[in-house]
Amino acid sequence: MIKLRLPQRSVWLIVGILIFSSAVVFLGLRGKRIWEDIATSQFNQQQLAIARSIARGLQNYFAFLKKHLAIVSQFKQNSLSQSPISAQPEIQGLPVIKITIINPAGQKTVITSKEVYTEPHLTKRDLIYLSLINKRQKNYISDTYLLSPNTNPRIWVADIVYAYAQTAFVWTIDVLKICEKATADIRSGETGYAWIINKKGHFLAHYEKSFIGENAFVARAQRNPAISFSRINLLQKQYLLTGKEGMSWYVSGWHRQRVGLIKKLIAYTPIYYAGSEDKGKFWAVAVVAPIDEVKNIVHQAVFYQWGLTFTALLIILGTGGYIFYQKHNYARELEEEITRKTEELEQTHQELIRSERLAAMGTAVAHVAHEIKNPLIVIGGFANQLLRSFEKDEKVKKKLGIIVKEASRLEGFLKDIGHFAKDITPQKETVDLNQLIEEIIVFVEPELVNRKISLKTYLTPLSPFIHADPVQIKQVLLNLIKNAVEAMPEGGQLTIRTYKNNEGIIEISDTGKGIPKEILDKIFNPFFTTKKDGTGLGLSICHKIVTAHRGKIQVESEVDRGTTVTIILPLTVNKEN
Image (tube, rainbow, N blue to C red; front, top):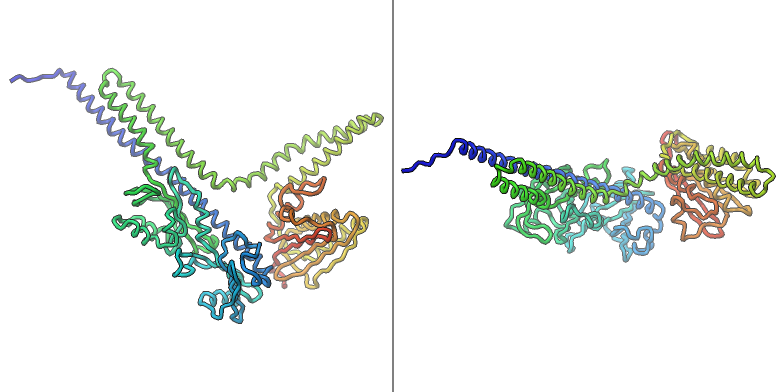
């Protein structure tokens, strides 16, 4: 029997190779898991950012609906029931299914998109809304509920209720339409999408159209009874349906056109559609994507890493250093690939919230105006000095005069831009509206006389007291009076009224040339003007100041008949009304 005896050096070489190979395998597997964890964590963080953006967008949209429908309820309360929804331009394009008007006598008028009719009986829900009048609760948003259990597809709605003049105005809103629009173009990674459920567990939006309006627990089970959805069901019960935010994973039986067991990443957050102050009314938005979309990036890089490793093991004696170099090189490429994918996800998220960054434009405009203002003052000053030096040279004098004039005009324009761009934070105090008007009249009366404009004032005997910044409100009134005077170059009549109806109201009317209907909705846009030398910022600044006071500004005008501007401001609670 022949015994094979290896040299001691060869034995140690083999042991070294085995130890090195084991270390390489161990480090490779561990590195793969670490990169997978990093990639999935960063991916899910981006999904959570997308979910928050969707929630913020829906909350802002409902805040807009509350304000807009409150205005319509208040100012059209007598004409709402005169025509169907389709004939009322103020609510065209809004997801309003019907309007219900209920008075204390129990009379109920229902307005749909096609007809207006009365109903003899009040439902339990109607009685609850009618009770808001006695509770002096001016507005209310209901829980999401099924409009009718017999309709197919199911329609889920929420009611926005306003109580005015002893009457309840109930606006029934199609929440499925709102949620579908909010999630329609959402894409997380390559194929990820968003879905929304209410706190009762019914889908309000989903990529699978057959799921919309259905119970989430039941719809999944019916789609594939062979799969256990215990993890996603537990996530929904403990987190999504209790208003919590977080990230996790679950197993599904499909994803878009793919079929089979698919592990998905999920990020979720609540949507407080009734406002952040009412946390009892919420939906949950979830953004999901297959986890293998993230891991495939890691797997591809690791595949090349392993190929390199096993090749290196065959030539370890001569290329040991080269192997470690290549491993480091591929690890760096892997990190760059993950970073690139993360940047793509961040770009998608930034596209969703780019409207929020527009607010920075105001700061940029202010900075540019500041940078231009100082050189402009120098130009104007030097031009003035040179003007005095060239009194006898008419050509030079004329040119310098133009420079001085244009520099002065630009200084005024930059001043208006500065007022528009700066943050308006009112320094509020209790202000007597009548007294404020009288102070303004003393200031403008000489100019009105010079312009052959007669002034009529009708100030309410019961002075409206508002909580406002008197300097800013004076700025608004002076700007509006200036516009009215400029609209009457041949003279005319200026009328100023004050009165109160749960709010302090100022009306400024002129008999000037008026504003054409086609541009009436643009007059508050920054830099929009019909004046030859106007900047288009005066009314924008007025609108900004009134809005900062939680008020409203409205304009009615008729060409060649005149214009009426109405300012509505909340009354202070510190004075008797």
